[in-house]
Image (cartoon, rainbow, N blue to C red; front, top):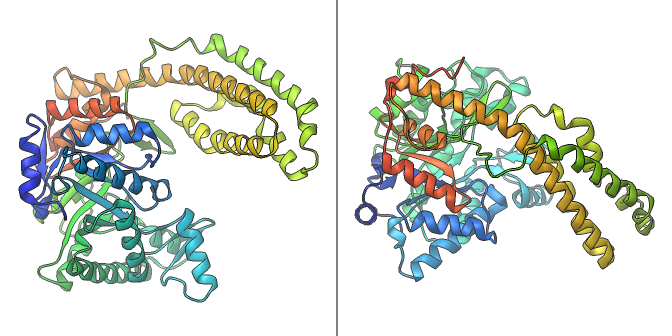
Amino acid sequence: MRATEHLTEEYHVAHPGLYSSILGRTGLRVSGAGFGGYRVSVGVEAHHMGLRRALTNGINLIDTSANYADGGSEELIGETIDELERAGLIARGQIVVVTKGGYIQGSNYTMARERAGSGSGFPDVVEYSPGLWHSISPEFLEDQISRALARLKLSTIDLYLLHNPEYYLSWAARAGIGIEAARKEYYRRIHDAFAYLETEVERGRIAWYGISSNSFPHPSDAADFTSLEECIGIAERISLVHHFAAIQFPANLAERGFVTEKNQRGGETLIELARRKNLGVLINRPLNAIVGPELMRLADFPLASLPLGETHIADGIEKLTAMETEFAGNTLAHFAADPEGTRALREFISVGATMREHWETFGSIEHFNDILSQHFAPRLGFAAQYFREHGTPAHLDWYNGYVAAARALFQAIAVHYSRDAQERSTRIRGELEGTLGVATEGTLSSVAIRLLLGVDGVDSVLVGMRREEYVDDVLHALRLGPLGDEGTWGRIHLGE
């Protein structure tokens, strides 16, 4: 079973008042916002409830990838669709499932390395960095589609995308390969992938295919630029009745190249060419704008229910450093028989000491959140596992208290940076209202989504909806509908 034109139309008739669009030449009607699966995983109840709320209230497009949560995102989607279909709350044919392949990370990385070691490795692998490889070879795509179908519990994927194939171009530039030679090889690889995906359409395992590339909107002379014009030409040379049907790329109020950069050979912008060729257009990263080296979150940061950051940070640091001193002087000796584990614990049980030195240097709420997820979360996760396996119940109780104190400190620091972020969001809203000439309703994130939908040719904006309240915010944006038009984007400057 796959999504059908009839059933997707039926779904939107059952959810009136929400903005929707036809996804290019697929003929499928999709909600103006799709459920983004980047940061969701199976087994997390909040993620399950968010997806359930979305699918039962008018959002019928889901975007995921094999490397999201190391396959856990696809598993969540498969379980939720199966549950809702069994309950009679949705029909499989009403839901458009998009997934992607290309990344070799996590379990894929382990599998690919083992195959390479045994002499049966995948061809055309880009060994980009330790723990991160990439491939769009037919052999790898066949493996990935099989795994995706199993995790999604589907017989057909509605839209399968090559996931950031431009990794090859970035690798080639670092390797000193000339840009013309790199591009020739790049499009050879895309040709082979497209030709293979046509065979998957014939098998019935996918219905349509496309590309998700961060470099579609880039200037045409950029080393990693992906030319939509070239990709269309490849598909048309393979077959006049090809199934290259959709593209995905990042766009937001700060990254506007898709409507401002005339990067196609014929002098068109990316969106103009996609529109002329009736390609489906999916927008990712609509609320996370990369401005220079910084990430800017296009959202509101309500502070009314939170404590004042500065009044709690010093106390939180003092409490944690006292616990760390106690740990180093007493508890750590319990683990002395394991020198490697002891060294790790000494390094990882150091939130207070680290924050005392660095908390004022993070600069923004986005950078602080990155530090939490990339630095502190894995270290505290390791410590928790170590305490469970090697400590006593008393040690675990101590550690749970330590984590609670660390979370309180993180919250206080988040408040400090959220104040600055909310001031920025208020300024952005004021600038947008000045550009539009009207007051805007809803959250800043809902305004950002609606402005993207105002561009003719944009079919669905992919939004992370890990919580039910995020789903409700998106639904509100879809009820209000598109805002502005393509010309609006040329007048948006966000204080530049």
